[in-house]
Structures are given as structure tokens and as C-alpha cells.
Image (cartoon, rainbow, N blue to C red; front, side, top):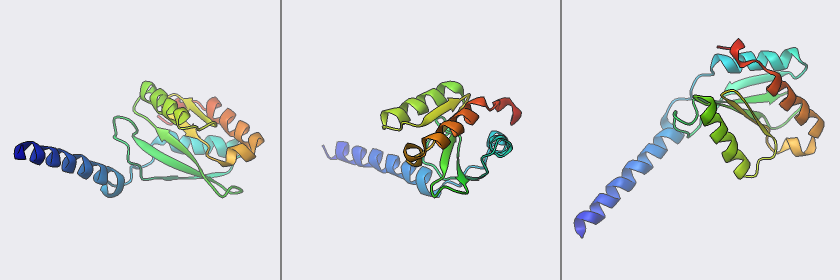
Length: 141
């Protein structure tokens, strides 16, 4: 019985250690070229943004990088997740929708989450989602 308790404690320690590493210790992933191209796309179409890389706790098999886009007039940035492939992006979008996010979209391997401001500023939210959907992701690759 003592061996079982020790094994369970070791397994819990390994999983918690991995979570701490992913959430707090692992370096912030650099912004992929798609993010830079997406920021240029928003700027060319009238939404001035400043993207920056964000620390995330996802496994790289789920999400490769996360970037926040600060819009000058908004207090809260919107977020874009860059996933390894389209299937994992669809899984990420489904997870956001299950969490109650109403303003989100997918474009290739990128997933956009607008945040709470989108409920109050629906015109800007629709324009942002429209520009995100119109973006050709192959520009940044």
C-alpha cells in the first residue's frame, strides 16, 4: 500500500512540475511570421494594432504560439493562437466556444479570440473578424 501511495505522489509531482514549467518557466514563444503578416493586414485595412508575444501554458502539440494584438482605442487586446495545423486549430476553437466565447474565429491554423469588448462594440468586432477571415495566411509563411 505504501508503494502505491508513493507512486501516486510521484506521478502527481511530475504532472504538477510539467504544468509549472509550461505556465511559468518556459520562455515565451517568438511570434511566427503569420502574426507579423496578420498585423500588417490589419494595419493596411484600418485597424492599427501592436502585436506582442504572450506566455501560454499550452503544450506545443496544441498551440505553438500566442500573440496579443493591442488596438489603440481599446483597453483590452484581442488574442490569436497559432496552432500546429488546421485540425488542432479547430479543436482550440471548439474549446473556446465550449467556454462561452461568442466572438472567435479560425483562419487556417490561427484562432482569433476577441474577448469581452466585442460584446459592447459589435461593429468593430464584426470588422475585426471579417478582416481576420479575409487574411491569406500563406503571406506570412
